[in-house]
Image: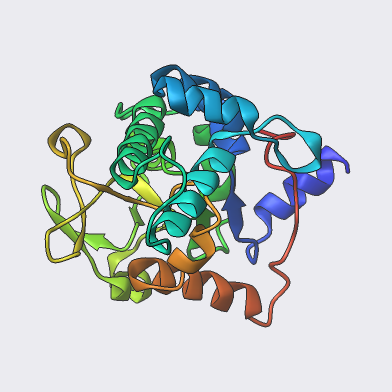
Length: 260
């Protein structure tokens, strides 16, 4: 695929974008192998031993996703037994290990509000298409590099939240044509600056103020498909499906990792 073709796609007024983990690598964010290595350091000895016994698909090394999947399956099996036959992992022990894994995924991604020169170059290039009224960017990443880069360039965008210190989700913002936003950001798996209230309301908060509040993100596991069918994630995924089904030539595939 030529660079000319890629440039043509980027500048096409009908093109929308789906960003995966590879697009954050250039901003210093980890891929799954690096994330696994970072999380492994914080595991209990039992967790480390368990990870060492697991096997990934297609004979690849096991990752943190394989570990979460195994622990969730084990947890399900234990709750279905009158007398669980494996004393190595108690229900509370599984919960504690999962909590450690999730916390360290967030810690590894970092809570810094940092920009990326690569992201900014991409965003400036997209802005060259003056016929594009608004650009849709769908992201599978938790980090805030995209938002930080947009704000550094002073480009108007909406992520579906209204407010600042304790913003709440309002999907109607994506349809607000009076706001003059140039970008619509859909974070399909949540974000490190999203947290849940006690009543399950998803809030966007300043990163430094979230503290120990549970992050509203879909962690890498088999359950992520089910989790995207409810609440805020269902709304975002429905927007993604609707965008791809529109009758215009906006469906183009490109390897984000290769061209980041």
